[in-house]
Amino acid sequence: MVKKNACVFISGQGTNLKELLKSSREYNFPINIKYIISNTKNAKGLKFAKLYKIPFHILNLDKIINLESVLKELYKKKISLICLAGYMKILNKNFINRFNKKIINIHPSLLPKYKGLNTFRRVLENKDKLTGCTVHYVNKRLDSGKIILKKKVSVQLNDSEETLKNKVQVKEYRAYSESIINIFR
Image (cartoon, rainbow, N blue to C red):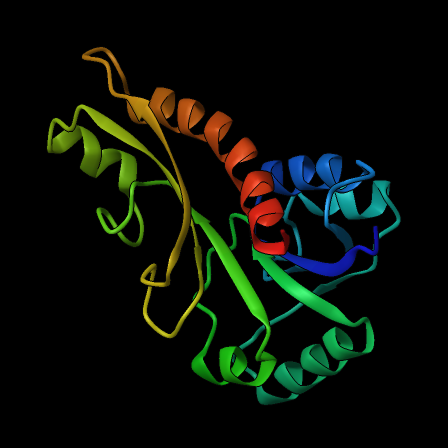
């Protein structure tokens, strides 16, 4: 199997990155992670880039110079897929247009419900019975791209934002890898 080259964008802990790296080591998984980008220099997830000896870059996509250098590097590495994994910045429209390949994101709610931030708080405030995660294509509107896959979890009366986050993250780890398999089938 010829694997496609992928880049993962992170901002924090890198737990989804870690799971994608594990999946990418499997023979039949369709991608190899060749590049990692973080918008924060102290992102804990960068330890995985160092551990797996994957080149990484700290960036500010708001700067035109940085945008050009990132695009140049993505094309040089023949990146076919960008995975946003806990990346807490909105990609600018120019970047999305210029990359012109697949960009996907994982969001901690059952989209189209609860786009943006503070999803677990909103789930609890609205007394929802179900929540989960959604993997979707990135377009120019926040959390509005075509949905690839959703995974659901039940909300219990004693759930807090933290317990919901933990339950949803377990689903995220499987959902992201399954979505990538579906994309390249």
